[in-house]
Image 1: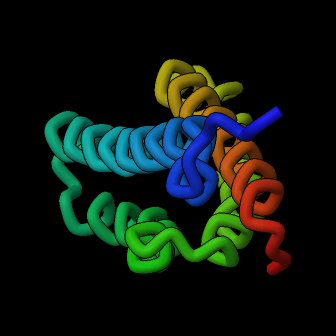
Image 2: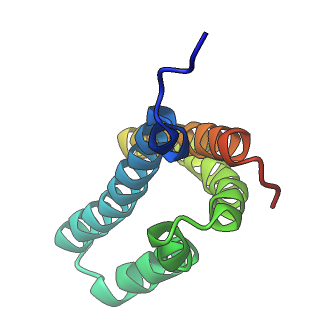
Length: 134
């Protein structure tokens, strides 16, 4: 029996790789947006802009390092981001147990969990399709 698929179809990445990449990018961008919006909300309520902006930079700089690697889809970047996201997960769970920032902590926890799961799916499907290692 003859293979009905064209050779070009075999070289195209599966839909799962593209969908997980989109999930990574959306959850990553949403997480950065939530960090920025919460900082803005703190500035409006407390008025201590310098302290809040310094904390925002400290929080977002470790995530911003990964932007170039995510844009070119470097597999090692995805792997390292999954490790770093676990540190943010720990911090967001702790924040979810505080009285004043419970909603913020829950939203961050959900976004980071989504990011981590999407990263794992992307890495596994990419390695499975292209037969590469790190």
